Length: 311
Ligand SMILES: Nc1nc2c(ncn2[C@@H]2O[C@H](COP(=O)(O)OP(=O)(O)OP(=O)(O)O)[C@@H](O)[C@H]2O)c(=O)[nH]1
Image (tube, rainbow, N blue to C red):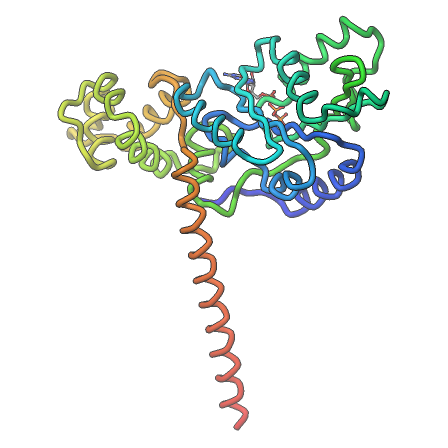
């Protein structure tokens, strides 16, 4: 599954971040708590080594609280990283973020210098909502600080502590195909080009493994089919997604499942765990190596073919 993302966008965002990163003391990355790995911008890997990082697992209300804790522990164990689960509509976030920034950059404001933080994140993770919550507070506090300008917005979070808005548009994980599916299933990526049947099969396979009891309870299927296609068919039949002649309307069944995941009817769901993505990373890295080796072999074979023709 491919997510369309344009090299032009990537290049522009990279350039803009490079231009301001030297002024930044700490980076705040907003992710989707349901997929903290897949909703990460790949550029964060290089920034992480360079600057302290606050990882915000946003939309925590939609994610499985137990797995949110697993992810928080995972990020907290990394060098120079602090993690926080948030529901951005709740205004308490500003105080928590400020506290974490001061922990990561402890001495700078004591010397009278301001601390600069930069918020970044892929589209739709809730950056604007978070910034609006923060801007609301700041407006009330400091009056006429220019709050919302499109170009390089900067807001005052507390005395001596400034936030820079994300420069440019950042792309999600696209090298890991499963990340594409998870971004689509959760609705984190708004892309109508996704095939509902395909993402429903991907989702069903995961839910059968990770949340079987919820499927039993919601769709009254006991025993629960073990295969995703069989599950979707039985679930579709139960929900009246049936065509004339009694055949299950697979597309409609797929739509029901995806919608009920997205609107939280199936409860809070997290689509990935650290263990799962670490395994996938190894698999996709090997796959990429294999593809490159095959490409090289084909290139070499074409070269040999041309030589033989000339003889
Ligand atoms: N359930 C839930 N929804 C949220 C939360 N925060 C934001 N949203 C919703 O997520 C959607 C995207 O939020 P935005 O703030 O526009 O996200 P963004 O990252 O600024 O998106 P771009 O402008 O595309 O970069 C909106 O529909 C918000 O209402 C949250 O904590 N929980």
